[in-house]
Amino acid sequence: MKTKSKGEAEADIRKFCDLVMHHAVRVMADSGASTETIIDRLLTVGAAHSVAIQGAANTATAFRIIPKNIEGGALARVEAQFAEIKH
Image 1 (cartoon, one colour):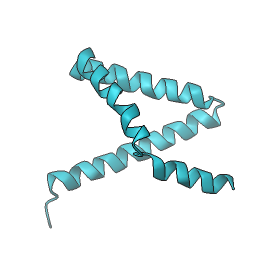
Image 2 (image 1 turned 180 degrees about the vertical axis):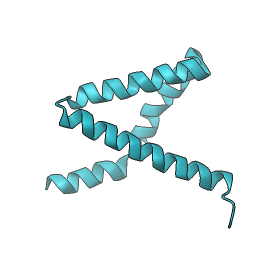
Image 3 (image 1 turned 90 degrees about the vertical axis):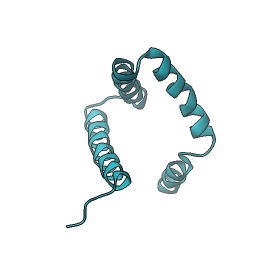
Image 4 (image 1 turned 45 degrees about the vertical axis):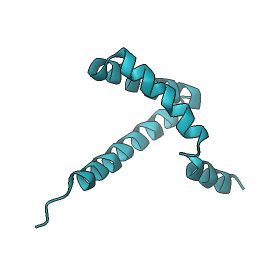
């Protein structure tokens, strides 16, 4: 049996985390939570966890990078997929 590389193992963990997050978002939405509330809760929990592990300064730096990545097209594929669904 082949041992996974660190990169492969990290990719598997990311996929698992994505599945858990998608499920959580679906449950929140199905329970009546607005998109704004869902985003607020996900970001708040993520930020609190990051502050506890990495500290406030590192968390703030990371959160400043996120909008730049989004504006740079990091989520363009997702936006295009939803545009197709709406049409």
